[in-house]
Structures are given as structure tokens and as C-alpha cells.
Length: 236
Image 1 (cartoon, rainbow, N blue to C red):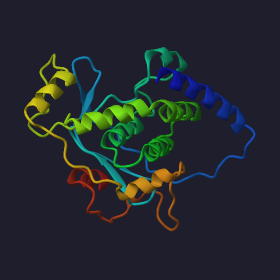
Image 2: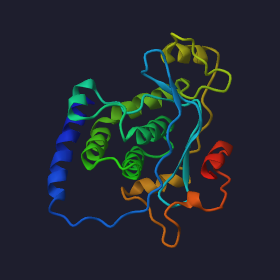
Image 3: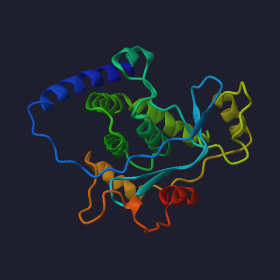
């Protein structure tokens, strides 16, 4: 993964240089991912979402909902790359949570999940260098994480702590808590394969549906697929 991220950094520099000789793209509609509310374990290595995180992709009216109780490590960037300005927590952190969820559930293909990461970084106003470095890192080095997640999911390891089982002791670590949940028979819910939002990962462009506002969040339309928490957020 480290080598892939280093290559990603190199690719981003080349792409940035090439970008100086291209005409700028027209502005695209943005619906930035919301802020993340999460609680860390004792080592601040893993973070559990306190609330649902609901992201509308472009202005499509299609949403990805990362449920409360989901555990993320944000961006998996080795410490050796922090000197390049990359770290687990940055402007791309919200996009990293979305990507973690897509890599865990595997409801979309890996290429679709990687491109949805890229779209969410664009909507998060991530700088072009960081955007390309992170994206190239997961494209080139994310397969091992994808495969590991697939095996853990098949083996019954939970990644979404259910209500009533989310409280860790002051010195508690997610790994130990996860083992207890598994021993108690806690399993993640069934994930629907190929949901409607996956198709937007067939492109790296922020989707723009003509005739719709820049963010459907600003309209009064309600969508049955959004959780109640998400509806409350979007109505504010």
C-alpha cells in the first residue's frame, strides 16, 4: 500500500503539471458530503459514527447512507507520507469514510467505489494534488484491503456496532470490542447488491442532471431511501 501511495503521489504531480496546459473545466454542481460525527477508541485508531452520514451524489437525488455504528479509520495513509502533506485526517476525510463503507459492504464494484471516492473528494473541495494522490493510491494499492474486507465479511466479522453495543470502556479498543461482538453472534445487516448509486461510479465526473438544482437537498422532495436522521439533516 505504501508503494502504491508513493506512486499515487508521483502520478498526481505529473497530472498537475499536465493540467497547466489544459483549459479549465466548467464548474460542476456540488453537494458536499456532510460533516462526520464520530467517537474514537482509546488509541484513536478507529472511529465509530455517532449518527448516520448521508451523502447525495451530485444533484442526482441518489444518496449513500453510512449508518451510525459503522467503524472507520478514515484515510489509511502511512506515516511515511505525512511529510508530503497527506494524513488520515484532512479535507478528504469525509470522502474516506464513504470509501471505507463502500469497500466494506462491496455493494458496488471496486472501480466504482474508487471513482465514487474521487467524486466525493471533488465535492469536498479537496486540492487536486491530494485528490489524485489519494485516488491513485486506492486504485493501485487498494485490492488487498478489498480482499481482506471480503474475507472478514464472509467470516462474520461485524463492522457496524448495533444500538446498545456501541459503548467502549475508557481504555477500550475497537479490535477487542469487535471480537466480543462476533463471539456474541453480532453480524452486520444484509447489504443490497448493486444499489442505484453505483452507476455514478462508472464515471469520475460529478453527475449533473440538467434542470435540477445544484443540490436536491435544497428542495422539499422527500425520498423513502433516506433514513429519518438523514431527512432531519437535509431539512435544515
